[in-house]
Length: 275
Image 1 (cartoon, rainbow, N blue to C red):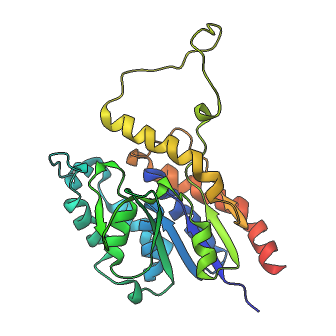
Image 2: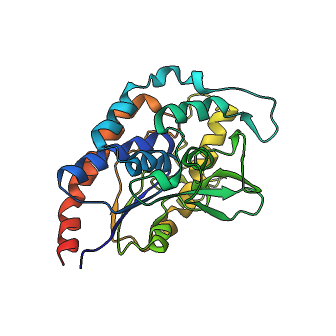
Image 3: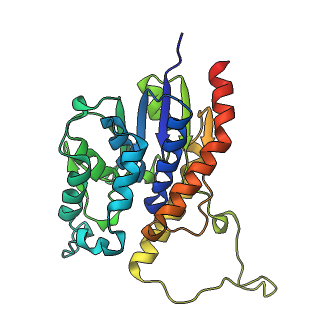
């Protein structure tokens, strides 16, 4: 009996472009995916894959966007639930994903958001794919919250960065997880100011409020990512050290690293599937 293979695509902002490199290798090696779950940037890539787009088409879409002028999708607003209203972001997503329903997708797909009022994980697998992805990538404070079925939703990476458990609930019996949010080493140690023999961190300039929010999100994400990976049969972790959540100037490097990490995992995937 053929095993149902699920692909969990993790959150990570710009680092999520590494998912494209992973997809390219899985396709080349004829590793068929039966269902997809994604969080944040992983939700955006996953939605495209679930539509039936192949890795090359997704690659072209990612490289064709002028990321240096990403200010075009920023509509600042008086802070109510976020600095950026998100209407232009939604228009951008619509130009890529389209305005389709989950029922229109060619592969089963779900994405993860967080209920900001209760802290609960919200799995979206029905209704508008566009609205679901918009909610899943809504970085707290930076983007306004998304209202969905009476809930107020933000980025799913806060509670489930790599949605392995979601795929289990969908019926997957073999899960490939792609984690693009490596643990932050600074979160694994305590620093005491009185210990003068410690090497001081190198800081070039004081971070602005958006830098601080991005860092906070990264730290929070790193604390829960290990738990979210539990139950995966194979974990692919591209080497993305030094690439920040908002660093979209390194798309090519991210895609390359995703591909290299996937190549390293191919033998393990095929061996386990054959068994």
